[in-house]
Length: 501
Image (cartoon, rainbow, N blue to C red; front, side):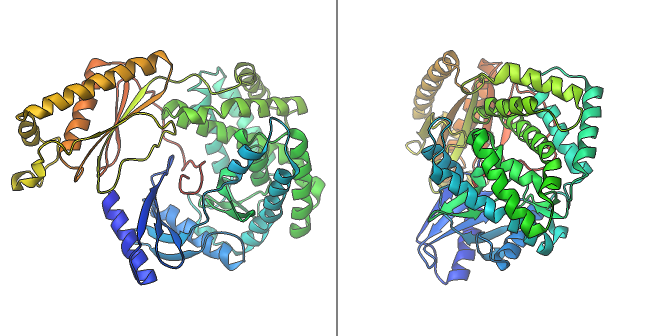
């Protein structure tokens, strides 16, 4: 998949700009099946090339991008697209997100005026997306649903229930919680819902270029209430916006929005806290799914921040009577609000990957930067012989060829010794992830053989160890002895800078 899509993106670049790119760099896309590359070497100096496997999601992103661009809103220009292949070229907006600006500028709970103003500029532009965009957007292209309606709300609330509450073992009454969900939905449906709802409006989806905000990752947008988006930004967990700053920024946003939309500010605020609630629950569902189920602990680092936001909502009072949800929230606050850092790791996962050196070593998708990359190119290459051209390193004939060479077992013994030592150390220290990658020339024979052999060895030796095996040219699959089972998310989950979304 990777070489084919990369080559297709290079070909689209060449057709569009009249020359091949001088450089191409793959960008991380954690939390997404999309592939992103940065291509350089022709005016414009740098371009983002993308592949999306979901045609409906691609259609929404491209349609919304062109509409927003036509309205003069700061979104990336789409230079070219091939709908049949699911690839496109977009303006490169750089790497600096609003969240990075927050992380660099704030000092504990004190926010400098420059940071407040940066958020203010973002919130000055948001009403234009919602109001002007709401009038111009083709909601027929919205994915996976045209509106944030009763069904969408119920999906989000059940996402919270099944992917956070159940996986975190928070006790609740199923029927009583369901009753509260429906009461909350009835309250939310009283809000005016004729606007463009950005859906994932958070600090990682705003890029700063020359200090000015640019907007990305709106492919999940749909028709809905404007309150949801401002709640998303101001209650973005790890951004940890102080309560006083929240109030100041909310007032600034409501003033701008009410003028543009010609609505009463008091009426707007009647349902605002309800949308804060549902957004926090949707986000906690994502933290649970990514953290507990997919074993990506950095997502769990957001839970204490979200729990403290919930504590603030409880102090202010919930917008309608939600007795079971209030009990659930109190349990969450009691368990997590005082935790200063990440939650306990759900156990060790070993990520085993094979790759081709033509494409480069795999990216660090887990965010911890640790592990091994073993170069298999010192071993004899079965790919030089015609009889092995149509098979991979998991084929018995390739295994027989390699295992007949003494160097193979020597290489293997060193690999196993190093990996086993790290597994013992990582478990003792409470680490959650270890990466082991094998590379060879084509990524087909030697690297695949060793990756598959190591995954098999670890499964047999460590019954409680989760092992994820991925060959670069194939889809990723899981071979785990002790992974929790959970239903897939109801709709795509985003939450990282635009190529990660």
